[in-house]
Length: 398
Image (cartoon, rainbow, N blue to C red):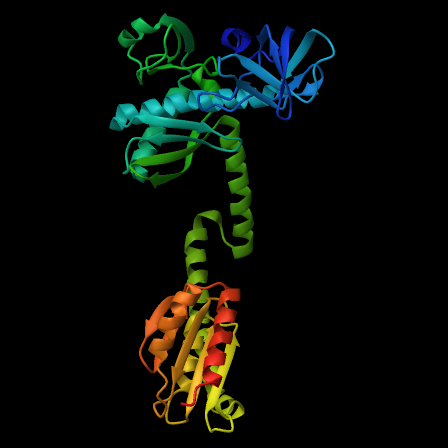
């Protein structure tokens, strides 16, 4: 088995090792060493990156036997190799992982909410809590406690125990591991079985912040950032707020009220604009009926509008108002909704037409004998449906 140097010193990012064997693998070759400082992607923590024997390390993982392999594009030229771990990435992972232990214990201490899942990605980390109800106040209180532990700069220790002894250690979560168990302890706060890389003192975590939460099933996923990630997020958000403040010509504290006022104004303008567009389309109805009137005296109006559904509905209803011997079909292209109708002096059954075409085109809809609609369609499908309606209208004698 490969000796894991990061167990001895999580900050170690340079090492030399002997190549034990190389095995062909998808994407290159798996290189096994007598010792390594590279952390494999296990236990929710993302794997380290860097170089080995001068080559970029494509992947670090554990095989089925639990041994560490390093995926390289080509076998090393020598049997003695030098490894360089990306130190910035390693420290970032140390901050996130220790921060996770602290945040998870905070939820346990305050609300008896256990962590049932942990995942670290390149941009954000998550814990899954065993609850489907988590409010903002609980998150704020958990962050208050977690950051208090961070700022107290408590020592983080590593100890090893026989699995049979762990029941007496007060672990946050019982372990299923056998044999020797590695335990990470945050002084007077948290003890957890863990094989990951961690900082030496909680102060190195810097700060912990939650960016959002989401419920899935009977659990709640908490998205959080620690240390450098939290700082970068703050800087990015501050830049966005400053830009919005300049655009709105107001201070950052006044932004919510200013943006709310602007949004209300925009909504009012959009409502008025929509009303005017609907009136404009409605005024086209008489001319459209005459333009599309056939030799049999029936006007068959088939239109596609680049307008929302309410305007298309309004025009269709205007076209069939009164006794003008008119069949109308109006498609709202943005919404994928088709409205069909006929004037009261015709007998074509729009409800029956919609029922027939609904199954053929996988649409939703219904209506009355004189007016109906079909929706839930893509632009392409809606256009094909409109063509089919046009064919039906042309063969309809009233």
